[in-house]
Length: 223
Image (cartoon, rainbow, N blue to C red):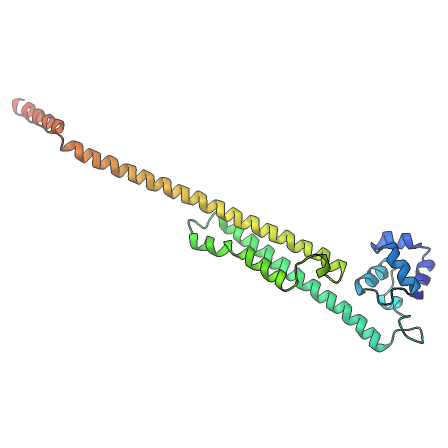
């Protein structure tokens, strides 16, 4: 890609300089400039264009066109590639925001929900279900799942959001356990009081209680 080399040289930059500025490997820049990499990824060209301060199309003039400029069909294909990448990244952003909001809502309700085992059963399954959907639809996966480096790095934010969601569910679980223990202590206290009451009633009917009552009656009569 002659345009890339010419613009880089006009800026007084070496391939190493451009690599350091954009994060694109020097080897990749060399292959693009030499024409060995005829169809670079849109995200790569976008990084290079941003680093050089030019439009992406300024770098796209020497791809299979006898006139040295991109044909309309090539331009459309290139732009569609960028749009598709941006669409996937927006999808990743939407999932990240949804998971983050869900985690915040669960965390905010954890300590004020009271004893709610049905709610706990419901939210306990959410991280697993969301994770399965994300893997099944290719939103999450290993590095080879992602066509671009940008999408791979963007997926890290989804992993972080999922971790926050797990922590929110764990917070809710601990709150439910504390509430259950509190209720159990109350039940134990009530049972203890009941037991004491029953014992007092039993004491009232004991032989000793009857004797005490007879003494009181006798003293009252003699007073």
